[in-house]
Length: 190
Image (cartoon, rainbow, N blue to C red):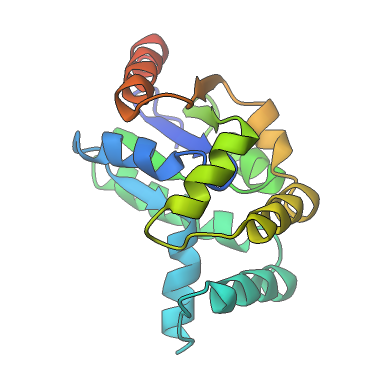
């Protein structure tokens, strides 16, 4: 891969941090995305597994596929999708939702010098409020606490957040978040 012209920007953050809003900002600029969760959804569909409104079927399948296919399964799919985009001539790609330290390391190894990791962080109290109020898949307080625990303990999500190249503090307006992302794009020459 090692094409100095290629830049891949990956967002990482806890549930409700604003990763999707950040990714949407870039896709509206015409930058293609590869969605980590989408790999799970595609495979569920391929196997005829229905997605439930509460997200339980997805959670169960995500845990099962990592147990049966290995913790690299999702990131292998993401790497293949990303390579296809590069082969099709894309030079700027955004990755939506790095979940684990394993995924972080695999991406760094596969795309050395091309990866830019951006952590989106939000004060916990504000993040919990946003997650409870979001229209799609809102979580009750106990659900988000459990999801945080699971992502930190089972997926080691703290690693990619701690090792990020840039940070966006998402505690204000969407416009303020977009301004921070614009600065990162400029600074990183994305």
